[in-house]
Amino acid sequence: MTTAADRYVEAFRRGEEFRGPSTGLVVGGTLHAPSGHMMQGQPDPAAIARLAQELMSGNTFVRSNVVALLVDVGLQVDPGRPAGTESLRNKEILEILVKGGFTKRDAAREATMEALRKLARPDDLRPWMGTFVKALEEKPSDDGLLLVAKAKAITAKPFIDKLARSAAWKGHESLKIAQASLGDRAREDEFVKRAARAHEAKDSERFMRALAPLGMIGTRTSLAALARYLRTPLTFLLPGAYEQSLRLSVLEALLYHYPDRPEFYPNNILTEANYQAAERVCAQELGVTYDMPAPPFMTYRGFPRQ
Image (cartoon, rainbow, N blue to C red; front, top):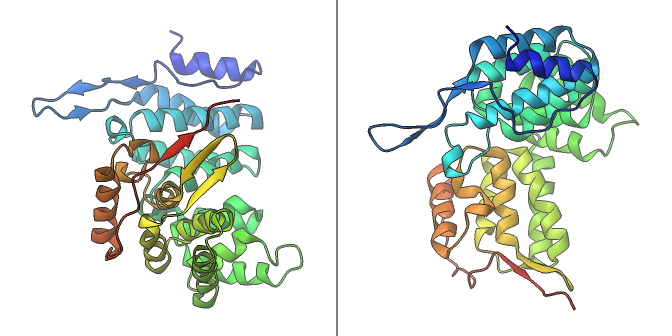
């Protein structure tokens, strides 16, 4: 009998690209437990096994689309989805993505790296640090560097130091982030001071660009420095289009490290109480305190077209 997984594989083999959301690959659906909490479904074991097989053996196009499909399934079964999160934390999906996605040096491997570094929690990546380091050594890439940084794969440090001495990689932002993440305090301090200088100068655009690297470095020092800006009064203005509070940009940068925390999702910020909930997480996780008053509540402000 042809299953939903078979139909997806056949479509990919015909050259069709994956278009989400996927259907037919999750069992159990969303249930209301007696406690009143929402319970997510789980990946269909037979379907996931079929996709895992194709991820190991398919060509690059098929493999890349299987990665996208598996990521979609992983997000569907994210237990925090009813609260607005999008994270990859299903252990079976993660294992299949790592074991299958890294089998070939192709675009599917890069897509796997990107999905893992953006959507998985650091602790969930650590069991496969060796795989990430080996892939980086085989084919250095920005996503590979950022992935070992997020996983805190300390065994990558000798190779990263070697890359830093090469003309091809010297000066790459992703390389500097990896260095800072794996213990280079001087490099980390550069990123922290970059954000501080931009904020002090009230240079909104430069400050906004300086936030994301702090979340990617993901050490307690960089995350605490980032979290302290949650009461920034700065906004980014695109004349004639919109104005955005840079408190949202701080949240987006924190979200990279904490994809399972609904408090950090900008779409969940509806009132000042939502900002305060994010601050409480930062206080609990990072020991950050907030003494300065919060600026007037703001998220986005659009301007009508003339």
